[in-house]
Image (cartoon, rainbow, N blue to C red; front, side, top):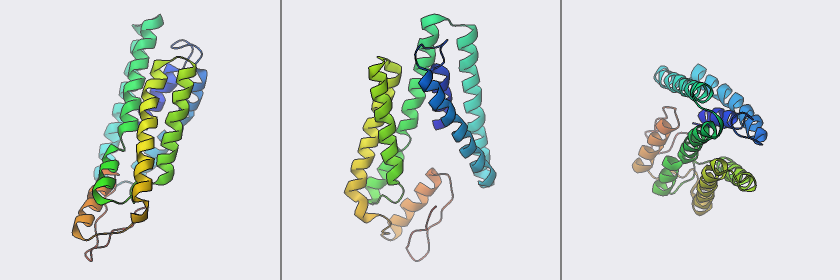
Amino acid sequence: MTLMNCLLSAWYGLPFVSKNNLLVSTINGTGAGIEVIYVLIFIVYAPKKEKTKILGLFAFVLTFFAAVVLISLLALHGNTRKLFCGFATAVFSIIMYGSPLSIMRTVIRTKSVEFMPFFLSLFCFLCGTSWFIYGLLGNDPFVYVNNGFGSFLGALQLILYFIYRKNKGKGKGKNENKSTSEVSVELGHPGKPNTNGAQNDHV
């Protein structure tokens, strides 16, 4: 979802789509390049089942992005093109920011922040907040609405982190092991709980 968001945002920021948003294109274009590297590394080292799933999602992302590009270039012009690309960007940006919701649910259920890294939450908040301010200054709802949502979710993650930070890595028996296994699947790797009730370490 981050790759999709970066690709769409980079396209939206181009001068022939939306004016005065070149900074959006350069930053998100760089982000898209980094995300491609992340995805390729995952595909190389993932188990066969996960590799097939991610390859399918990767193909979907590239196909959807290509469709948005072709439709906006060939069928739409002027403000209609901006609206179409802006809506697509905003929708997938909100989905990207909403991705950690399942982990936040796990934090509340297990009362542990083991699977919600502090710096990831911090920079999610900072990223959403900075783009929210940028969108407000440029009066661009396709930038400030979705990133305002991301800033809010990032703040919630930080609040949860500070509430449960002292419980990081503390296993609580079979129920905790079940949660660990579930989160491992959500994160894309098949972690298995130890038989003695302690959690596996995940890198």
